[in-house]
Image 1 (cartoon, rainbow, N blue to C red):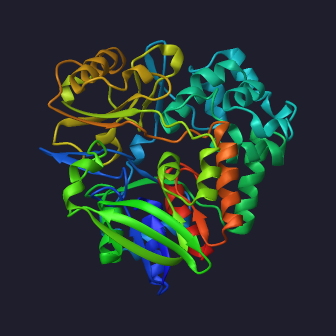
Image 2 (image 1 turned 90 degrees about the vertical axis):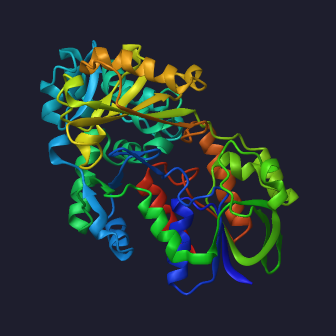
Length: 469
């Protein structure tokens, strides 16, 4: 009888497993992929280094920084270039620096005078209280508090950059709980933000957020944790069944002989090399996407509750890395990247200026761009080929940053189910998972399907899970 079995070897499951192991508990982590860390993978070719999944880690909590030190990764740490702090938003075919302060919000050419007056009057607008506020969409909230132009040219591209989603679908309380709290606690975004900042300072919990990565790519983080877990991490393993009794949980899984199995590889291809394993544990921790949780062969009572709950939407997203000689791009690329509002009617959602943000991402005298395509905005692009996507991207980049010529490097990573959308379905989904935790005290859910989609949120989810035991 182990202390815990963890389903999912993404960063949440790995973090929880490592912390429990450090406390002397006996754990096993079951992961379907051939590598740890889920979408956190890094690609290298001819001097280019590209992140296939998350592109950086935003430090929002001092514990995450301590965790990195504990793992021995301080010498790998790369901080974002302070000269690349600008975020560009496209308006009328031109990238314009996004305002980084209330003062810039009223002086920027990104917004009209009418929009700026709407921003200045935000603190005086009426608060929407629960239960109405609990189901309000991001789009409705922003239009109500700041007006339609701020929605179109600030929040719409921001939502595309984070969720690859639609602000009309996302529920504010779930997708941006901090923003929701600002209005509820302070009566407005501005007053709530000031109150929140003052409170954090008084408590001594204020922390300057910054984006970081690692010299050898983000995948060094899950790989390091995996090495420390040793043979307690089962890769290439698919859960067959889960049963519960008075003593705990029985998990049955199949493991291939180590031949890598991608998302597109069927279980049938590896069937000849599969072996059954069984594990027994007091606690069961689940850090899987919602669609994977629903596919597991749970016992009847749990399965019925999960099947009766709507699944979360997961739009398809392409991450397209493109390398160019510096002379091929007129724009200085002096920023984090650019986001493109829906109203601009472009093929791409935006582009990160990866080689401007971090050193050693491209050869000398070259730029690396990471272009995001698809999402809820352009679902029809989900099945385009790499060459088709390069053509679409280059047409937009030629107009927006003065790109000429063909890339010296390209690499496409397609995620058919990329990012969970915290839509109205999330209300029922989270209620079901938390209800199952109450009914089954030794069952725990975490990861991006319940605890936030950001990489930092997933790490903190693993920490919370470990502490709950």
